[in-house]
Amino acid sequence: MSETTYYRPAGAWVGDVIPVGRDDAFWLYYLHERRETPSAGMPWHLVVTDDLVRYEDRGLAVPSGGPDAPDLNVYTGSVVTDDDGTHHLFYTGQNPDRCGADGRPLQLVMHAVSTDDMRTWTKLPEDTFGAGPGYETGDWRDPFVLRDDAAGLWRMIVTARHDAGPQRRRGVLAQLTSHDLRHWEPVGPLWDPGRHVAHECPDVFRWGDWWYLVYSEFSDAFATRYRMARSLAGPWVAPERDTIDGRSFYAAKSAERDGRRVFFGWIATREGGHDDGPWEWAGTLATLEARRHDDGTLGFAIPAEVLDSFAEPLPVTLGDAGEAAVGRPDGYDAVLADGDVPDRYRVRLDVEIPADATGRAACAETGLLLHASDDGDEAWALRLEPRRGRLVLDRWPRRRTGGEQWQISGDVPHAVELERPCDLRAGRHRLDVVVDGEILQATLDGDVSLSTRVHRRAGDRIGVFAADGVVRADLAVTTRGDRPAPEPVPAAVAATS
Image (cartoon, rainbow, N blue to C red; front, side):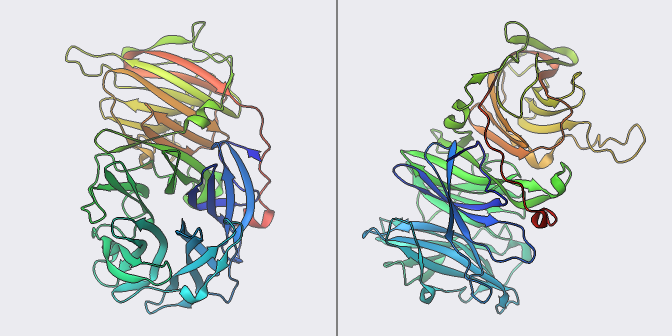
């Protein structure tokens, strides 16, 4: 059993996660990405956790079919259990050497079953099927199966694209129904918004009086989003804040356990291990727990188990009392905490944002400095901006574009793909932050999440800042015991990352 806040398999990365909630644990199937060239095919591996902190790696779960098989790559799908206790696993089969009518590699829905409580899986190649008339053959993936008790049948939702129409707006969630989980009949789409290239990794569930549709898209903002409806027939409406997290947390799917809804996704790596490198596919497993508001909308936060696992206090404080007034009414000010932080720690920052005469927030910005230099001038900043209603991640110095004084990317105010909308009215707000090596995950007021990966470190200090206003800040820093480092990536793999 490996104890690590964010799981990554030895010598590989976590791709799309297929979570299954069991009575005693979450079983997390995932696409095991080694970034090998040439590729030997994509398998599913399995990791199990009962507390979202410790992970048991159970290794290979669904192997690649091999170089000549339609499922050389075993891509994303779902797992359900029928009334007889047989487990059914549906997945995407793909082989780059097998192309369809649209000239692209075929994507096929494939089926496997388990009668030994998911210890082993038997593939049923005779159940394989591809896209039907009106759909592109190269986009027919990520089958998600759910039971529709009201209709007395099973529904399969498939990431698909119409074979005609504007190229970037053909994405549709196709739908099929079945009574036996083996024979499927196409019906009308679950959702056809005419908006995105594709709606990947669909996830559909009911919670209270609402149905929720979760999907990931890469054509607008590269994000995992959700929609709400009163029934599976729709309409699927967008809440005011429809993203689960920012750019780096992708392909999130959920599972229920003990009445809780937990989302599992991956925090992407960056090419070359550099903060300005392009985002890559796959990364490190991360979790968020959903909370349901009275109006049915959802908030997302770092699970309590993860936060509570950081129980060892560190002597890193804002002065003797652990709190301080920070800021200036007419400028910027920062207070650095005493002491350095280790490689893995949690910060709890409470800030009281004052109100002006009209009741509005009397502060332009405040937040937390991380990986800061001793004078605080170089750092990552988790910045709360009350007047703009957002949480952003920024860094200083930013990327330089030349040697002149002004060539400091001053027109890039923050990492725009990580901007998170939030409610920052005057009053008390809490920022919970977990840093584990290069992973950074934050939650504002237990409702808004921001997950990412940072590499550059100017130092080991943290601090609090404010501008155009004075806030009262209370800071606490804790850590956990050492954990074994992941095995290094083999040289041949590292060379291709």
